[in-house]
Length: 227
Image 1 (cartoon, one colour):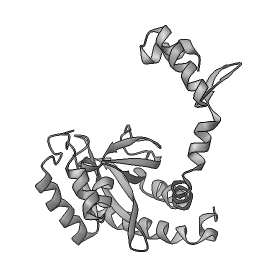
Image 2: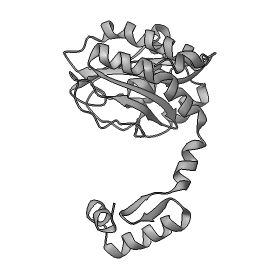
Image 3: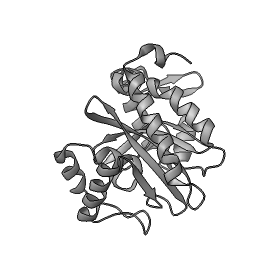
Image 4: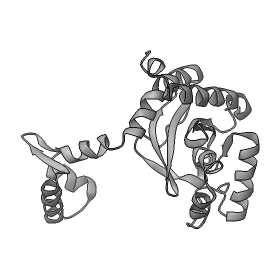
């Protein structure tokens, strides 16, 4: 990408973009090439410093691919990071709406089924820290009261699955199941589609099976590299 393209996309003054680019180049986050700017080697090094995320994504990919093909719905793999979830991998289904969540993007944990699935089995201090943050309302159905969210998390612990009933988007419903490494929750796998068309109880079992398969693949390198 050129400086001109960055200026147009960011809508910042060109002098500001030049100054920021120069600083990013100095830090090794951006490199200049004959064709423009690209991410620097330091960004690559940062990515390599997160082996657990890479291992989890690699272990999950065959299962997520199969799940996406079988359901034709959106499928995602997310981890908790503070009051948000970070999507490690996403697959867009043919029969599902296009969503802003993509690999590497963040979303408020309290409004997503993945976030709620992970929070329900997280240590109390992590839950309370999240509840201490502003619970932003994204739709009329978003849970924004801490006590109401505590009740929701207790229900998720009982049934082992979390639902998003139009809490992130007015037209989307989803189901998510936590993924465990031994007794620790490490991620969640989700399936989402158009509200009113997707049967959450039906895809509940598919998400549960996927979560179990991914957890097993984490400790089975042969299964991880089978496809």
